[in-house]
Length: 137
Image 1 (cartoon, rainbow, N blue to C red):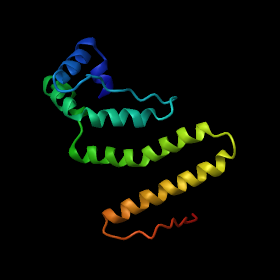
Image 2: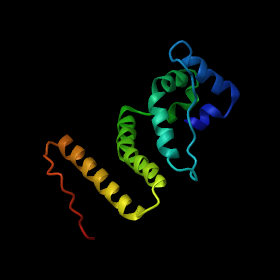
Image 3: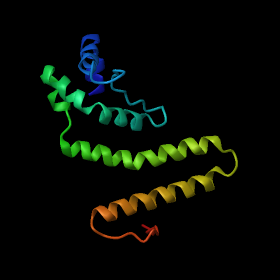
Image 4: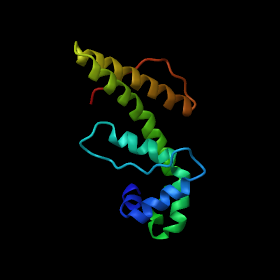
């Protein structure tokens, strides 16, 4: 979707005009850059924030309707964000520490997985004991 919006100056401008008088600072969608840390997360966060404007934009550019997201896809994106946000937090935190980054990283990932497991279990009606069990393959 971000490529479709940003591919021409007219489409990009129309996307910004849709936001006028509705947000303080209009902005565009972000691209995913494979060589940049947290790029996918930033792109998805921005797309969620601009989803109502994306719907409005698609009403004008109907040829891009297949690129639009359904409610199920938005729920999946929000789920992916829940998984990626702790990883970004710990990536940024790790980049500031010099001593023992591996141990710090392992603790961070374990805590994030426990939080994710508890959220997942509570959504499915099961309780969470706060422990993370690793299963060997």
